[in-house]
Image (cartoon, rainbow, N blue to C red):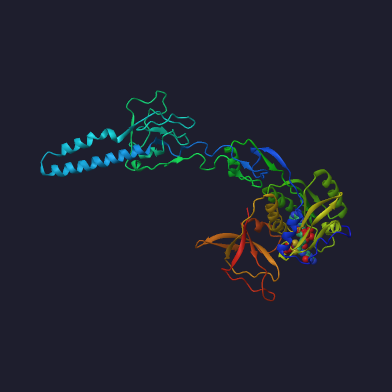
Length: 472
Ligand SMILES: Nc1nc2c(c(=O)[nH]1)N[C@H]1C(S)=C(S)[C@@H](COP(=O)(O)OP(=O)(O)OC[C@H]3O[C@@H](n4cnc5c(N)ncnc54)[C@H](O)[C@@H]3O)O[C@H]1N2
Ligand code: MOO
């Protein structure tokens, strides 16, 4: 840091909100340029340009059900004719009630109207066909997704025909047998125009903006691009991140532990979390408690791996071997407390390395502290700047009483249930930041506000509302 540079940690103790804002500001100058990728690689990426619909979705009016394409006027005529037949039969029955042997005459009157009760069939319309127009007074067997013939204005599902199935000849190549007809149920004859028809453009009209630059490509969004016929798409390149896990006691998973050693959990935590945010971890290293080793690695990695951001864990509190603090404290990175537990010690700044300035975040070494730091500071910034999936926050009631920390927000881990339709959270594990296994059984972070009252702070009773953030 030159004398002209501002103090990278001017605030003494920061609030959570102040540190979150500082982390966000660190990313201000990071620009992720655009590249075109195939649709197969586009999931989870962020769109670099607006996409305009060059076709409508759906591209043509089509059937929503397997059934019969009809003109509703024809069904209305059938309904009217049946009503007339029923009335005539009732009148005849009343008249014949006085005279013996009249039942047969009434039956004959109803039978006289039978031909108006059905519609002659035309050729079936399978999905993928371009059908001829539907002639008035006919019905066309039609399959889900098939194009509605011109002139048809509704589809009657096959279940509303009598019998409720397609005739066997459909699917044969022999055409429509002479005299083939369909009989509709009473329910079918009340069909209104548009029933079971999916109009052209009803999902997205042609020429509309389908999605705007900055949209994260979820499975549904990638599906829309495919439906629009896009084989490739311009997206932002992923953020490139360099990870350092520090500490002479830390060895990689797979290594046999010698006395005093532990396996590196933080690289795994950060890599998994960052990958879910669409970030590319370009290099991940273990660095011993030796400032010269850290500086040497940084010089080489900044040159060779071109990271956008560097994230370290460990080596930032008040010990005698705080490698990150000792190596970087005079290079643009500030260190100080944030009023939060876990994750109280933090470091952040624009690291001066090899003549360039790279956003640097230093997380505390305890694994739950690293996890919570990522969720509280890094993920929200990645969501705001680069379209990473944001985490919602919502209220839940505490299942048990808990005493918060005076003057500091506490981020506990919990499991969410529902009681009487309301979210209720039960804490799992204690507050200790080494309790990683307990944290892995949690499905939410539980935000306990700084407690009031002189230490110990006043307890929050069971049933008190707190904010939770779902984890995955
Ligand atoms: N005198 C004080 N001591 C400590 C304070 C303090 O205010 N005064 N703060 C405590 C808090 S809170 C935290 S959090 C830690 C932060 O310390 P560091 O960031 O310097 O982290 P380390 O000392 O290197 O490690 C802490 C802890 O975590 C383990 N660790 C480190 N890296 C990994 C890894 N990659 N995977 C798994 N576990 C890791 C390490 O072995 C230590 O047990 O400082 C407190 N002390
Ligand atoms: O703040 Mo430390 O992260 O509690 O354990």
